[in-house]
Image 1 (cartoon, helix red, strand yellow):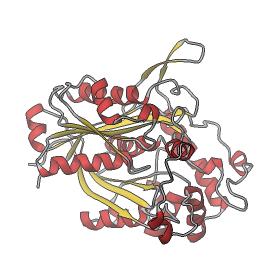
Image 2 (cartoon, helix red, strand yellow):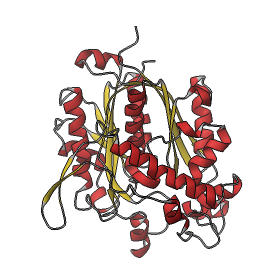
Image 3 (spheres, rainbow, N blue to C red):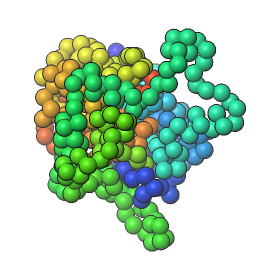
Image 4 (cartoon, one colour):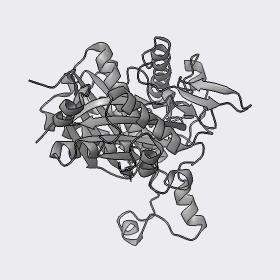
Length: 395
């Protein structure tokens, strides 16, 4: 079986809810990161075999096969197809996994895999609410109701259950939320994100032009006292708005290729995809999946957690990476070293590719070898992926 190589990785800076990116169409955001990949790698516009894009709320501006619309809106040739993936918050990480599987199998050579979510325009859960409001039913059918009678699956409940199971208290969560902002502040001020972020030409609310190239959700002056003063999202709970991911707009994309395409188009090798995993777990606690997904990926790679130099575990809530680190005995100094979704945002369908983009660039900056991305997902599924930094094809 052929290897799959990451040859390009870019993202937009995220925008806050109703913020600087709220007027930009998600398809346009997706097309911009696709075009940047084409420009940076030098791949011919007819040399891409497919565009696979993740998006969660497939309604309105995100409906109608967004992946194909992104491809048609980019500089790629019209003959390049596109498709759309919904693995909830892991949609774009799943897109990368599908792309890797395609090039590893030899059925395709170059795939652009990514994702986008315009949460200012298409609010989370809007597709479900639209179905209910128009009499189109609920996602929970009779058989699922028999399996889980009377249970409404909730990520907020799952975050609290996870904190309880792994003995994570409010004090630990607030400290971790502050650390996320501090790390994101440091990374931004030191220019660590500069290479991975595609500057966007935007219009501000007053119509004046601007460049968007800094993640809008980072609180550069965050304090522990400020976080401690926030009310919990659930009565008696420990999760607050400060220890939950930010609602965001943004896009990211990865180009994956096999060795044949790397040689044919003289593509830059950035990393090899070393192991892939996707699992299902308890949909009630819901957010615990990254733990067994990571264990599965490590076993496939023949590696231990201490062999991994950097971890990107999505901060859907602070309890997720903290529980993950406790369960696996992971070194928290390697975890989300440039901040996570509590500070940088979580544009749902784009987050997996966003995390992978940051991981590729940070491995290069540190000249480190192995990195891992893991992400929890609605319905109790999770994806994990291990990559190995490289700068050329192996001999």
